Amino acid sequence: MIRPAAAIPPALLLAACSDAAPPSDGGPDLVTDEGGITRPFAGIAADEVVSFGGTEPFWSVTLSGDTATYRTPELPAGEAIAVTRFAGRGGVSWTGEYAGRRFALTATPGLCSDGMSDRTYPYFTLAEVDGRTLEGCAHTDRQPFTGPAAP
Image (cartoon, rainbow, N blue to C red; front, side, top):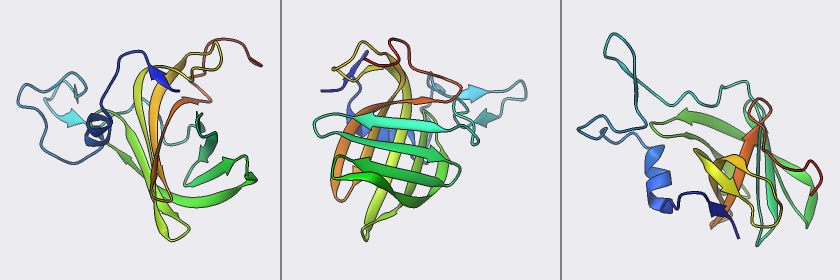
């Protein structure tokens, strides 16, 4: 079971990557520059390789550029999926199509544990795959997990 350090309802995670109006107080996850312009989340650069994964059921995604490779124990070689990136107000999302259905990933900042190892990840993630919502954790090539390399 995935355990984010601070429990965040899934609906809020998905809303973080929507284009709804910002909170009237500016919200804690909005970045405003000196000119008063609000910018989208920039915690994960477009050129970072992002690794997502979860348990119960086991799944993983490696994302590089505009390609996400989805893997499960039944699909060990993985399936490449073309995705489009969207930087929202509190995280990043990627969407595409898998098996004729919507495929979506979100990465939201927050310490996350996969519940099976002694690792801590810098991002909580939700994935929508084949009509199911999967929970997990994520890290990038520049923002690694902490803990043992081989738990």
